[in-house]
Amino acid sequence: MAKYKPKSFYPPLAEDFILVRHVACLSQKNVATMLHVSLKTVMNWENEKTTIPYAAFKLLRIMTNYELPGKEWEGWSIRGGALFNPSGRQYQSHELFYIGNMFQMARYWIADREKALELSNQAKKAPTVRQHLRLIQGGQR
Image 1: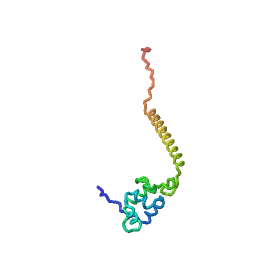
Image 2: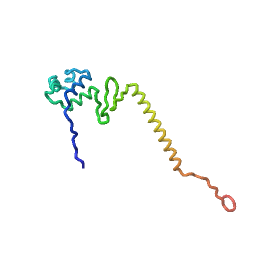
Image 3: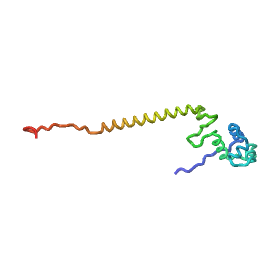
Image 4: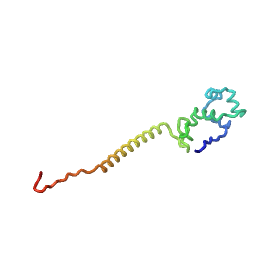
C-alpha cells in the first residue's frame, strides 16, 4: 500500500497576501474581521513579523473570489464579475448562460442518440419470426 505523502508548501509571502487584499479592495480591518483574527495579527503578517498561516491565505483567496475551492477548480478565478480559466480566458456571465444552454442541448442529443442506438440494437438482436407454410401430404389439416 502506498504511503500518504503530505504535499509540501511554502508559507505565503506577505506581498502575495497584500496583493490579494488590494485586489479585493479590502482594508486590513476587513480582512481581520473576515478571517476572525485581530487587526494586529493581520498587520504582523503583512509586516513579516509572523508567518502567514497557509490556511488563512487560502481562505482569503477563496472568500474574495480570487480562487475557487476544490481540486477541479485549480487555476480558475473570479475577478470583476468574470470567470477566468487557468490559461487566462475570460468568460462573462451571459456567455456562461449560453454555454450552459449549449451543453444541455448536447446532453439531450446524446441521450436521444443512445436511445436510438439501443432500439436499433434491440431490433437487430430480436429473432425474425417467419411464417412457414406446412405442406402435408394429401392436403391441409
